[in-house]
Amino acid sequence: MMATIQGNDRDAQADREQLAAVRVAVDEVDDQIVTLIARRERLIRIAGTLKGDDAEVRAPGRVERIIEHVRAAAEKKDIDPDIVESTYRAMISAFIELELKIHKENS
Image (tube, rainbow, N blue to C red; front, side):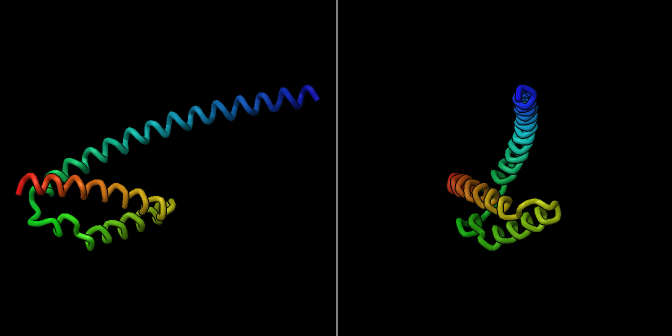
């Protein structure tokens, strides 16, 4: 009985260590994602000054083409396209709001 309890303790400790390592890796990925979002924001700020009206900013056709593109990219990488789509829809919505603000300021 004692060996089993000690074995379980070792397994639990190994799981905690593995989880800690996974969390460090996730934090590193998050830093990379934030860097890419910053790059995307800089580009969106430029685009916001170049568009003619709010409809051009909202561009629902363009949004759907982006979604199709990222879903296909997700499928090629064998990751869940629904998660990618949800993430992109949230991000695009936030960027559209930013772009509308920028467009209004520059009109």
